[in-house]
Image (cartoon, rainbow, N blue to C red; front, side, top):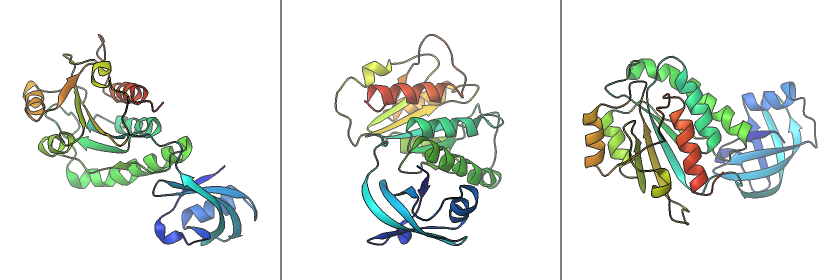
Amino acid sequence: MPRFFIDESCLSEKHAFVRGGDAVHIGRSLRMRLGDEVTLCCGGMEYECKILNISDEECRCEIISSHNGRNEPNVHLTLFQAVPKSDKLEFIVQKAVELGAAEICPVLTSRCVSRPDGKSFRKKLDRLNKIALEAAKQCGRSIVPTVTEILSLDQCIEKLSAADFPLVCYEKGGKNLREVFSQTEYDGKTIGIFIGSEGGFDEKEIELCLSAGVTPIGLGKRILRCETAPVAAVSIIMNLTGNM
């Protein structure tokens, strides 16, 4: 069933409205008709709806039923990703969303080869959030994960250390993720995982993480590429917390 995201202003007690480009997409691209059903998502809720009216400006739908999103993890995972070269961040955002991340925070570290300033990165940010939106639709998410503006290392560590499980993936090794996630109940827990760029982390950066209470973790004997490591880490964490 086609899935669209709307905000609270598009909801009433019995009806929901799809506006803008999505309304055009419903009528012209998908060629949906009156009586067809769609899933509309808002704030983690899913609304099963029947189309009552279609125009290029607005699609009016009758709410048939509603429920909490069934495909959302019971943990809130934030991926802190040191900025990689070229378009690797687009791949990382897409896969992190598919795997269940709630937020992706690009971070500028000392070994980042790509060093965009805030102004130039904002031009890419719309595209990254659009990729997150399309990935959320494709994989059946009930929320659209956010890609934030670039964080400094200090901003990253401050936010990372506030998580219930603050982790940094270090190429020189650390705890096995099975050691970290050995309990059985994770509902509502927050997880932060920090992944380096192509050059990994400077030792001083790891020291700063450790002094803030961040736990270093390893992903096995082989050193993974910066675009492979987040996919592996998020997959393992979601599996160990019962979210796969």
